[in-house]
Amino acid sequence: MKFSSYAAALVAAGLFASPIGSVQAADAGALPSVNMEATVKAAQIDPRRDDDTLTPGAESSVLLVERALRDRRLLDAKWVDGYFGTTTVAAYAKYQKSLGYTGLDANGLPGKTSLGRLGRGRFTVTRVVEPGARVSTGGVVVNTRTRSMLAEAERLLGRRLVLEQGSYNPGGDPTSAGTHDGGGVVDISVRGMDSATRTAVARALRRVGFAAWVRSPGQGDWPWHIHAAAINDTDLSSQAQHQTGDYYLGLNGLADRGPDDGPKVTIRTWEEYKRR
Image (cartoon, rainbow, N blue to C red; front, side, top):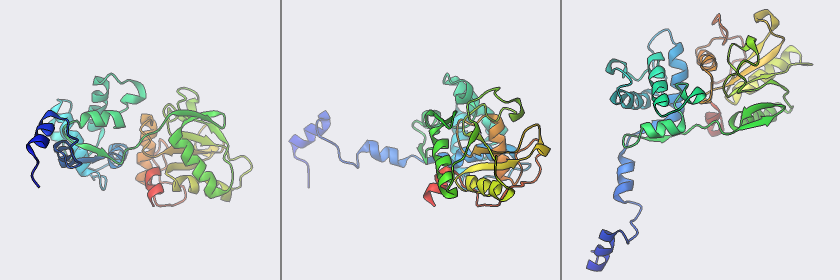
């Protein structure tokens, strides 16, 4: 059916509500998409690799991000390769700083706001990851994403977990080597737990999306505890980013980069766990 001349005039004047298939919607739908979950995962794993293997499922998204950084003269063209290595992390951190971000907001991990701004007119962002607000739980500070992950691990275990150290705690514990400076990282008390129970707790934490290990006094200057870093938390400190990357590569998250000594589970992020 043809529009009447009156309806056509209304459209021209912007007074006629455009349908879902409008030019703007069609243009937005034509843009390629960046999978934020996959991109952030690559930014944690790729810098820790000894080779140039690409993170599965991330290449097309990383290429879109790298091309945008290149066009802003923040990344040399030779590094536009789908590999979110240290050079791309550094370039993304420069981009974040160019937006006026500092501290954790300029840690080189793509955040929702910075990624959206980078993609204006170039790409849309899907599978968005957000750490959420900082909250107090169990006497320590975490973010809402971490709190939800801990609650689900407790549900799986059928027991409460006691937190010894939370997140956003720069300089709070020198033995932590900066892993607790950002978000997504907690230390859990194992007081009263036998070996089997400690392993069960680490397994539950891994199932819901933490890189988690039982730590012993023989490994460092600390008492027995469980250390857990939330994979894909965009507030992770650089040290915690390295731990989550090493976890994917089958390592123990310690400075010696030894083999993973924790329970074997299918590695998933929190968002992947919720979709399983």
